[in-house]
Amino acid sequence: MRARTLMVAAAAALAGAAGFLPGIAAAAEDAASPEEVVAKVGAASRFLNEKGASGIAEFNNASGRWVWKDSYVFIYDCRLDRMVAHPLRPDLVGRPIMQITDNNGRLIFKDLCKAGGDKRGGWVEYLWTRPGAGGVSRKISYALGADIAFSTGLQVAAGVYDDTASAAALAKLTDKMADPAKYPAH
Image (tube, rainbow, N blue to C red; front, side, top):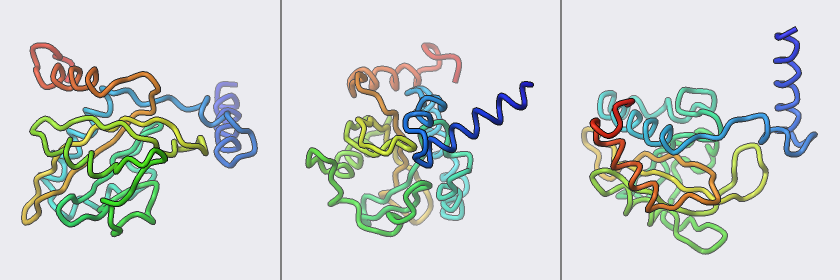
């Protein structure tokens, strides 16, 4: 019986994602938390530091470990002005990023590059299409530098779709998570 329930839920989620049952996909999936985003972005930065450029291809895999719930890690190069890896938007890979704006005219990657240039990274708010939702939503992403050999300007980011979280509150969360005494779970 449990297997049948899971199959029905999966079918409903797929139907919702395909547009047959609007709203079902968003209801069926969990939303990523800011803590998960910080942990995944930190892990992605460390992964690239260890693997170097050979690790980049993993971030283009839409069903890989860097995609979870309603979020995903993407890689961009601020110095070379290009998207390096994006699991859900392969059309952006290799293309210039600095001119990309949201519906409010905000230069998204200009702000992400500035935030990610900080030693502990930073949060940026903008509008972006939420996976499975089909519409534009408020997204707040955490960006962090990724040091790999022979490359400067590389950053990794992921975000949450949240109408209430502020960059200032999430910066406090990031500071707390960076201090093992305050956040022993990571």
